[in-house]
Amino acid sequence: MSAPHDDGSQTLTQLGRHVPAPSSPEEAVLERVPAPHQGRNYVVRFTVPEFTSLCPVTGQPDFAHIVIDYIPGEWIVESKSLKLYLTSFRNHGAFHEACSVQIATTLVERLYPVWLRIGAYWYPRGGMPIDVFWQTAPAPEGVWVPPQDVPGYRGRG
View 1 (cartoon, rainbow, N blue to C red):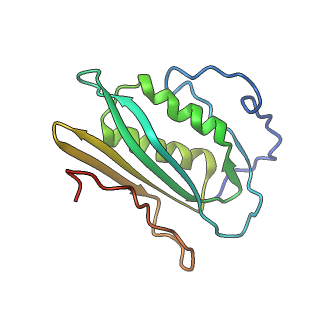
View 2: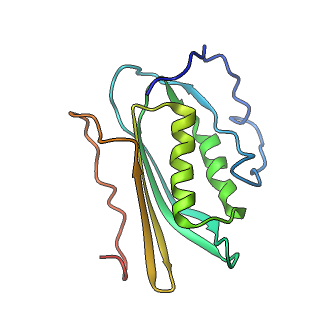
View 3: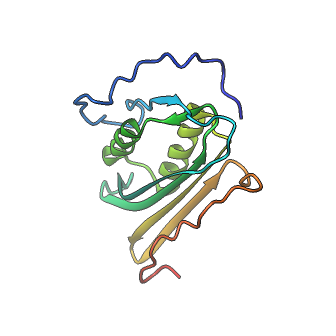
């Protein structure tokens, strides 16, 4: 995937500043900076062991352990903005599948990575865990992509 022309001159608006948590994913701003090693395939991993959203039917909290792996193209995500974006789901009602794929596709639309995958390991509700996986394509050959190794628990095989 290639990014539209952007001179990288955007100003970071959140890093180093007090920024309140956005109230929804639509209000959150994902900021990016030029990738330091453009043209090299290396994997960046974000692990979010305490992700929270709301059930769209009951309003009860849902919890997940999310692992995002991506190979940058021209851009990397600024991590504070990613934390704020993920925090914005705390008041967002959506099914597990919707939250998981929305996170991944939003990152793809903003970063234009070479490759991206998400593993969203949702904790059981009603005795059944739901795991959601999505990726842009198979990982490029020759790239080391470690397993996600999310710890198992009763209910997940």
